[in-house]
Image (cartoon, rainbow, N blue to C red; front, side, top):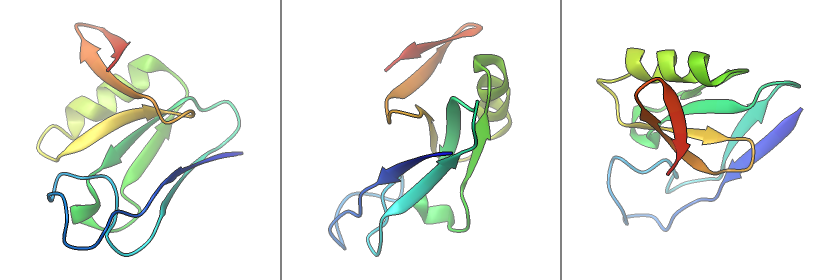
Length: 90
């Protein structure tokens, strides 16, 4: 299992669209073989992410979560955006 840590931001800074919390680091846990996570903004609370093995699964989940502020991240912390039916590094 790989763990991606989103470092805590300074309290009272940024916006509700930030992935980082003003209270603590966020950990995204990738089970073996999973490459992407669709991570909701910290504003929404809770676990706030799903993990995926393929680009297609991450794209589908991102589209399902279109009403929420979120990002697609890989196991290295790189952000990705959807371009048609594929992901491109942001």
